[in-house]
Amino acid sequence: MPLVIYHNPRCSKSRQTLALIEGRGVPHRVVEYLKEPPSAFELKRILGLLGLRAAGILRNKEALAAGIDASALSETALIDAMVAHPAVIERPIVVADGRAVIGRPPEKVLDLI
Image 1 (spheres, rainbow, N blue to C red):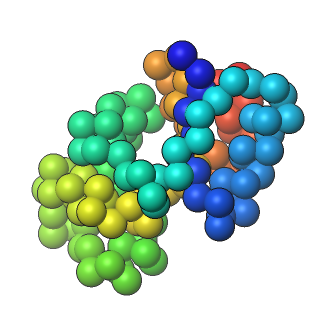
Image 2 (image 1 turned 60 degrees about the vertical axis):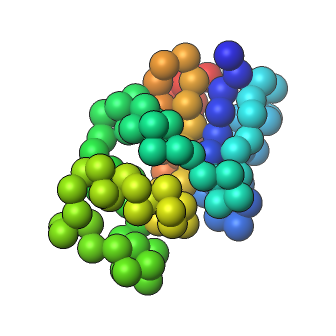
């Protein structure tokens, strides 16, 4: 299965991570998660691969703007809020071979390829 990058083309770190993947010729699939948000099931799977809880991939400034108070929500409710407001999900997230990393810094993706 090819590497998957949950990508936001407006984000410089996401663009840099994608360029690293493409520069190495790694087969990949780009998911523009603002247009095609992951389902709650998929987000839980990604969190499991990252070894994080939902708050660990929450962009706090964007969450505040979306009216999401992570401290007031259960894990399930926070995941549902992230699916409804995908801009609050940290980016980029790269998944490959049953592992995942957040591409911050972009070089972290090298651990997967």
